[in-house]
Length: 266
Ligand SMILES: [Zn+2]
Image 1: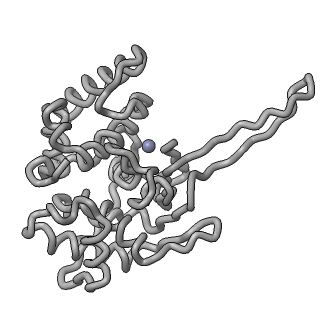
Image 2: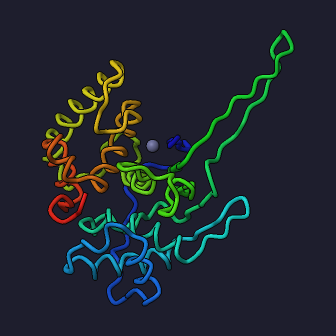
């Protein structure tokens, strides 16, 4: 499934984010994609649309999209990915436009590798290591189109690999995949750690007991995955999130500086 890997040779530290440039706007074809394909877009308050448009326009200029395995990444696919990645940044001009992630590589479906070995008794064993998304430290974001395509059944309620992987990019901006993205001030850290730790431990306990949880049990692996799955639900089902996990929702609202439960239909 979603996975996180980092190369170890990169220097740490928050890169200087380029503030989004003023004046760039989105052309009519891209706005048409937003209206037709992006579920959250019709409900987005008018006051936030201009900023989203500018961010998407800049994203499309700055980021290189690559299709792997002969996949052609269409204009519509680029706008769709950019729209979700940029929604997350509406309240975060201080962090730039994902300055460490310059490339988005799109696979037709899940990707990864298979390892084959022969057991002593002659049995052939194949181990599959597959992903639907991956984020590299200061490297590309990898996505499986099959799992984000709005026209396919790959994307289930509460799951969105675009939010998930770009949450990892934000988490990694300070050099550590620790589930703590660059907070606005050090004063916020104790509250963040207290709420995140309690919610993470609660998800781990639910996962071990086999109990159903609103948050994806994939987040029980470690705090970095927990932040990524919480971000998915923050933007996918914010109203349920706020009702079920009020304190956690409050921390994410404070970090992202936006309140999707106030306008998003979920
Ligand atoms: Zn992940």
